[in-house]
Image 1 (cartoon, rainbow, N blue to C red):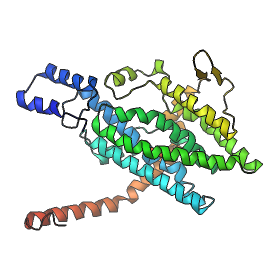
Image 2 (cartoon, helix red, strand yellow; image 1 turned 180 degrees about the horizontal axis):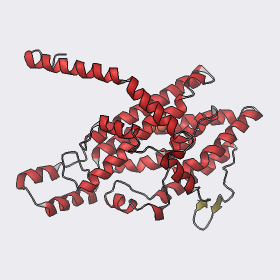
Image 3 (tube, protein in one colour; image 1 turned 60 degrees about the vertical axis):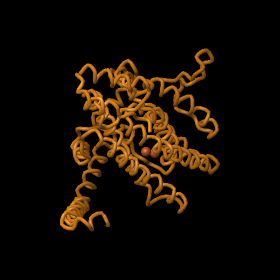
Image 4 (cartoon, rainbow, N blue to C red; image 1 turned 90 degrees about the horizontal axis):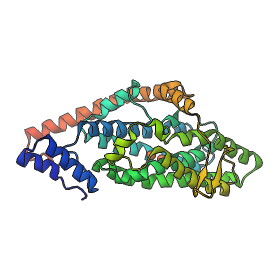
Length: 335
Ligand SMILES: [Fe+2]
Ligand SMILES: [Fe+2]
């Protein structure tokens, strides 16, 4: 129970003016308490959260596709069971996050519509293809690893429903990262061609993973406001640095080379120096010109269309239950 809920209570008791509401909101945020759905919040705060949570939810759902492509081709029953569990977790993450977004007054159907019509984004990383089974391991290690760096600070986000959803999501992301690393460890102890497959996957995913933290701080104009609202806790460049520092020793243990000639330990800074990602490539992928953008959205759109009968059946069932509860009030709720 981190929330006070008092901003909403104060609003109804004394009907304070806009300044008082703003002040109360700032106090809650600054004292590390949580803003809850019924509390007053600035329009910009609400809009920023809706955009961020929706984009996050879309990323979880679209993110099922690159790995889902390997479910029928997993090399063993054990690998298939692990991958199936992981992909199902991502569906669950999407659902928690759509629910968190709904507490801000939007509807999940509306968000899905915005995704499939290209009006809302998802993480650019999922627009790259998965060419071999080593990609499944590298996605777990690097992509879920980067997601953990991004998401652990969100467990302390000022908006309660988002922060609470992230606690469980982060626990599952740790499992994803470990399953990926374990798969890659197995490959690294395998044959020469398995080690080549591992290195090739690392070469293809390294730079897109660094881009997951977004543009450099100088080109990220919304960061300062998000940090003031305590939605975001660290800048893009800080998180990227943390990810590189965390990943380099893991790469050494795997015996792979990270494809960056500028990557080296800087004793003075106490961090690794590293090269500049290709920001033009990120721009192209965000604009829809990545290798798999069209394929991902087509797949999502057709899944949505094919699922229409399920949504209709569920809505009809809910309406029937509700009308039964109205006509026989004493029996209502027994189901
Ligand atoms: Fe996830
Ligand atoms: Fe994950």
